[in-house]
Amino acid sequence: MSEVKRAAVVGTGTMGPGMGAVLERAGIEVRLFDVSTAALEKAKGMVEMARGVLDRLGTDSSPGGSIAFHDDLAEALADVDFVLEAAPEKLELKQQIFGEFEQHAPATAILSSNTSGIPVTKIAADLDHPGRVIGMHWSNPPHLIPMIEVIPGERTDAATVEAAEGLIAKVGYHPSRLRKEVPGFVENRVLYAIMRECLALVDEGVIDAEGLDLNVKWGIGYKLAVIPPMQLLDVAGLDIYENVASYLNADISTESGVSETVTKLTGEGKLGLKTGGGLFSYSDEELAELPKRRAAALVAVRKTLNEQAV
Image 1 (cartoon, rainbow, N blue to C red):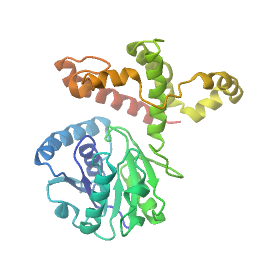
Image 2 (image 1 turned 90 degrees about the horizontal axis):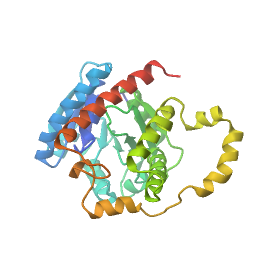
Image 3 (image 1 turned 120 degrees about the vertical axis):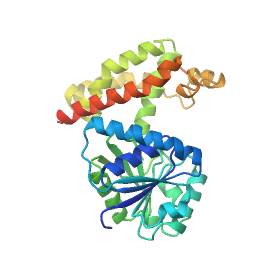
Image 4 (image 1 turned 90 degrees about the vertical axis):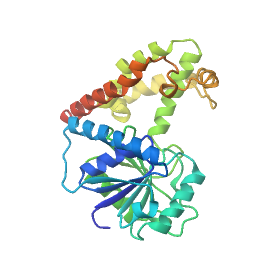
């Protein structure tokens, strides 16, 4: 397909506005759609916040970019080159939405899903043209994390993969293409493996939540941003890894359920930031300031990594 000039982002919850801001920055005419007018109003403020973050990052800005807000899907999809779905993680809902995409989007438009783990093959199972459907999993916050997983389904066309990676290059991000579908893809599988072991150590009383975070943040956390896992194996030495893994792997958590620390808290209605507390408690002031502070920190880290790219 030709260069993407118009794109629709369907769903303005947690990630849609940030995705829209990134696309706008690349000179693309963006339509943000949601069935909820209240969600669209909230999205306007989120877009402005994402624009401010991109300004602080100093990312290039191409002419022609814009964002419009729509509550009519057919109107939002008219004449677009690319559709990015960012709806809740429910297979039936995504299948319904993609059926509507086929009705309203141009026949040449690429249809992508920001699903964080649902197989793309299942999303496209009942479509007439599954070849133009692909997974594009952005990492949250999407205006700060410059990597997008590219997940072809079993019937995705090669041209669709090429178009998705072309769009990612256009916005200045890094594509990470999977060679085959697995639930959760790559990023979330690695993240949830880490989370499982972290929670197991807390469940077993080895360390508390605050100590665990301190250990990871100043231990492996920032190191992995510079020396990622496969490279770290070479740094450490494959023989050293083989020796340690031969006894440690057998002792690492293989829990197939959910941590008792988590289920206890969710049972009490403590869900994290959204309820004012989870593993940690937050004051109203902290809830207001944390997103800003963390965005500023991520901006600084990304700038440093760009400057020191190896």
